[in-house]
Image 1: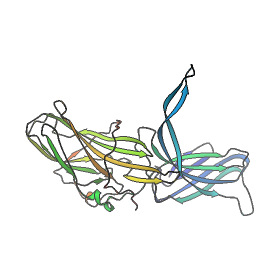
Image 2 (image 1 turned 135 degrees about the horizontal axis):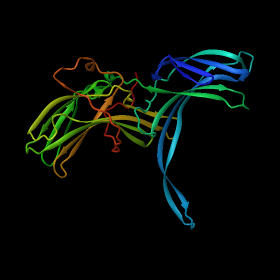
Image 3 (image 1 turned 90 degrees about the horizontal axis):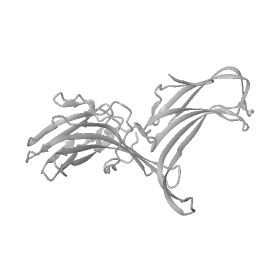
Image 4 (image 1 turned 90 degrees about the vertical axis):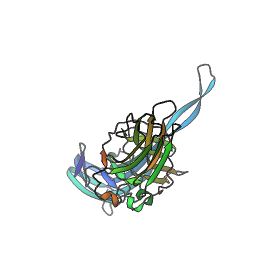
Length: 353
């Protein structure tokens, strides 16, 4: 049981890491140490709050010291609750309007079920905006002439995204690109979907008929997060593919496994929030970016390959990995990357269990 404390309130949850899937039941207990001789409350309740944050670019008119008008660009920060659900924990008894607590220790259990359709929490994240956040707030509802006491606990929530139910996640994803030196990189992902902690299997075939020097091929897994029109690209990992540094052979064939970090990764998902008009879209997508670095001017080229990140693997990913395939352990440095995401038409817009 996980616990968070203040001077008076201690709250425990059935998941100590405060991670839940959409549609899952949250169980807990509120322990309250009353230090008042007599404390009058209208009630005690929980608030489940989903909030999105995004930025927009705006313009405004300003006047300088001489009174001349000028146009100024600025960034406006938006924080909008898209979901708020209240769950009563303690209510006045029938025929009474208030709850009276005296000095001493009190304990109240609580439980509720999360909605089935929720966008994922924005993790990982190295910046504040845009975001999707969830909180549980404990409210001691005092009479109107007194300030309510509130205590907040952040939750991490993911929708269930079963790759076995998504056809593109089980199919190969081909790619091909060349440069003016006739270097041709062909290949495919063995499967278009993967879950954290598993391997993204990559088959590459490099043709280099002129024996140009290929300095390296850099692989980057990127999470594209878009809330309203505010976009951020989060680097999950970046690494050089092996045995291709300073390569000048005529061909190179290899099957590689890129291990996805065993951490919380928001799954590929699209959600439309109806909290305001017009509705706001929330999109989480991924891509594997392959940067081919070639010696010479204007010879580098890039390939963008869409990847589906799920929470439950395909049946093939449950099987043992062939021992002849090389295992690569990429690091996960923090970078920023501002190119727009690739097309993801093949990815379902909404995944439900």
